[in-house]
Image (cartoon, rainbow, N blue to C red; front, side):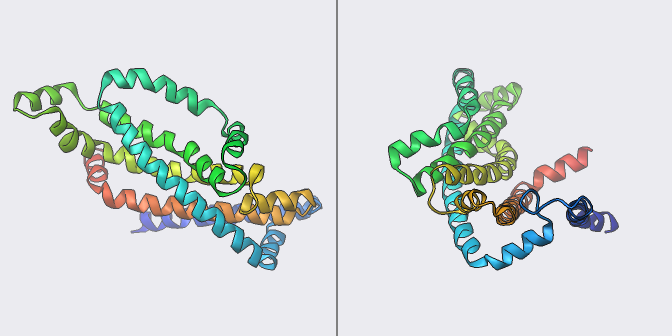
Length: 256
């Protein structure tokens, strides 16, 4: 119990310590707020502009979730398609790596030409930046199924689709749920990138407008909101991972 309590308290202590150090450094070195505001200034600005921040944060949140949902559906389907065949895995994996290497900020202007400014580019950017870890993890989970196990199942009369559905997919689920934690944080990055380049709403648009008028505390207030949303969604999917793949955790703890 003591060990679990320390693990629970550690992130809170580290976060509070970070804010305290940040506050002290800004005050000791008299750093102007238009360069680096203190946490207290950022939180005060967060409260002062709460209505505008709430409106834009909600827009960013639902846009991110829509893009993330598309990424989950597409990534799971593509991951199964790639991981089910060694030939397809070898053929498509380099293409995926090449696509993922392209900075998504360079794709946003193309999306604006195709779909205009606003919601659609933000959703697509969130999708494009977050589907890759899902595809890779699902494909890896399927591709790492032992050849000996495949041969044994086939000798027992199992068809290829039976092996995939009854053995491969359950074995890939820990990889899949682990990838969701990474993908949701990347989805927030994608939507905010799009909002700063081609948005008329959202936290990214709010931060860009604030920085253009040197209201840096408002920029940091937006950063805090993004961080809170990202950490919150990460925690939710970490809990889902624990619930859905508890058998994998128990197995690793038993062997360890």
